Length: 240
Image (tube, rainbow, N blue to C red; front, top):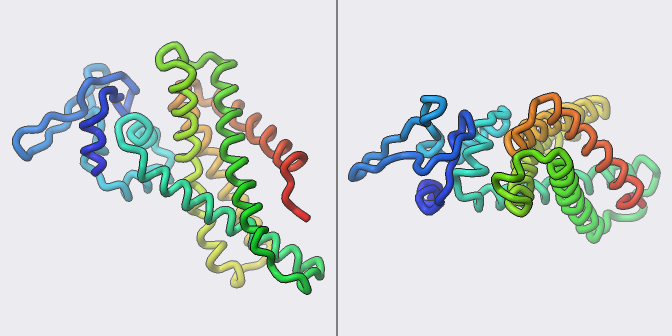
């Protein structure tokens, strides 16, 4: 399914150096042979023969090659679906944390309210698009390779890039499943590491899309995270 999507696309990139290519592989009868990039002399895209689960594992390992493959050389429908599932999962985690806080504050006489989950989901959706918007603004201010693809295409790439960075939230699964078997300190430490991985993922995907240096990407992402946290806390606070 992924390979069919690749055949239908017109523009590809080398996942190693980012050079634009016309083809990623050649097909002889039923045999597929990957082509080499003219610039870096390596296989243009090894992931055309890989299953999606392997690509997702490489997302978690912050592989720039896997990000380029997903952003430029593959049908993104599967990753949109997974991103939606992750947003629902993250919303459920936030909702559960709020209910635990209500219990600690002796508000347990009030049962968990259903619309609270929808508020959490709206909160996470807003955070998703706010971060994407801030990344687009930063990209415009820096003028990072916008002349090649245009602002509209670059903005769409940023939206997909943030969706890929959000795959870090898979690491919230253990604390969601085994929350009762850990201490508050352990849960906080776990969330700290998940946040750290998410920031590293944002730095990586921003480097891939904007083609800027690691230091520039790190500064931009940290600034975006601080601004996002300030706006979400002061203008979109969902706590009672």
